[in-house]
Amino acid sequence: MTRLLIVLGAAALSACASQPEPQDTHLAQEQHACAEIGIAPGDPAYPRCIANLDAALFGIDKIAAGE
Image 1 (cartoon, helix red, strand yellow):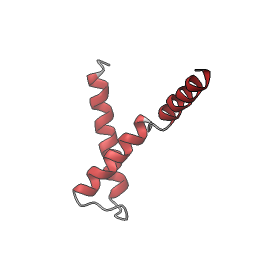
Image 2: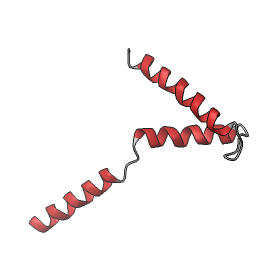
Image 3: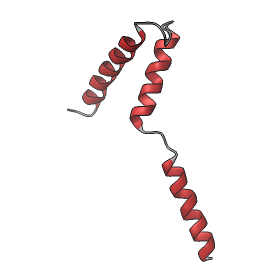
Image 4: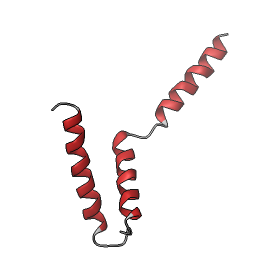
């Protein structure tokens, strides 16, 4: 029984550790959105696209949180 609890505890910790950070998820979504509208990673506008989306989404998150 103790061994089962140790294995389950280790599995739970492993699952928690493998979850992406929210900022990583946001970055991936921003990168995907820029690529979807035709701005490729090598394009000079790509970093600006990501930064603009990040700023806009940050503002929306603050409004949603009531700040």
